[in-house]
Amino acid sequence: MADITVVAADVRPLNTAVVIRAKATEALAFGDAVYIDSATGDIPNVSKADASAVNALIVTVGIVVATTPDNPGATTVAAGDPCDVVIFGEVTGWTDFTAGATVWLSNNAGLLASAVGTKSMIVGVAKSATTIIVNCGYYLRAS
Image (cartoon, rainbow, N blue to C red; front, side, top):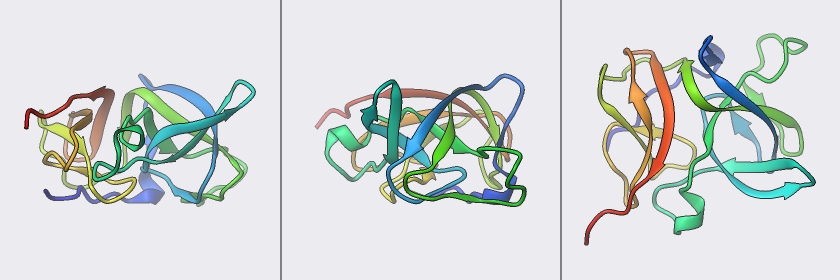
């Protein structure tokens, strides 16, 4: 399994993106794949998803993107801070996707991969070398 190279400073949603507001429960980088680990009222709390972990940790909801224009140049979100998560649509900011290929959750927390990890979680499809169409889907591999 090869992890896809992310350039956090370049990660941003494109026009088709559907974005939700969440709260980071750990430090996150732009481009991290996340799952909902709890909620505070109606606000989901998100942490890094991980394909090597138990099933609850791999159900990816989306990709963390730039949070606000007030913090230009930022590439991370601190634990406890709000963040935006693309749950469907286009996100750019990587360097080595293969256009048309399935994008998987990596065994390395928060990262995307070109091949399936220990547990199967599709995060989307590569539109180009730099852009993913986020469309998360969980699949169990046959043993």
